[in-house]
Image (cartoon, rainbow, N blue to C red; front, side, top):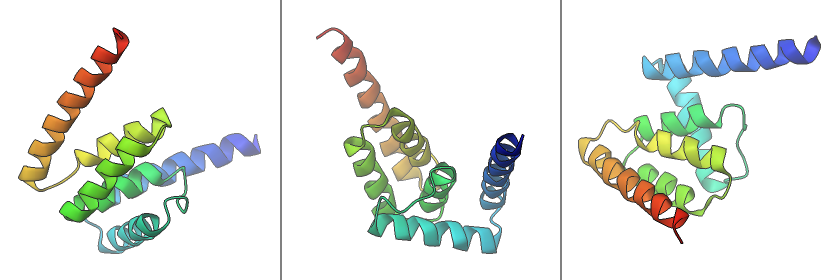
Amino acid sequence: MKKEGEYLTRRLQSLLISVAVSYGDVNTVKEATDRFNQWMQNTDNIDTELQGRIFDAGIMYGSEKEWMFVKNQYLNVLVPSKRSQLMKALAKSRDYSLLSRCSNFSKSTMLDQELEQYR
């Protein structure tokens, strides 16, 4: 029963962080972007339960530098679940030019994956 409670607590924490970041809660955004910046310095240094939310915050409140870092991580990471989180985060940018690049990148990535099936 304890493990289930811990799991639910972690899921709730992740959801609350997501909502707070989306609404621009200053303290939550600062904490999440600080963690994102720490992750940029050491990509092994991230809470796996919260990494998707931290990626989202880094992109939402970051610049092209953060966006390119996440894109490069996507290209180099082999774990499918982490790749998915990174791709989703790229779409969280509030910069229209980066969103356009994300759209083009995701289209080319999907095409590459489809072509790979036939090789």
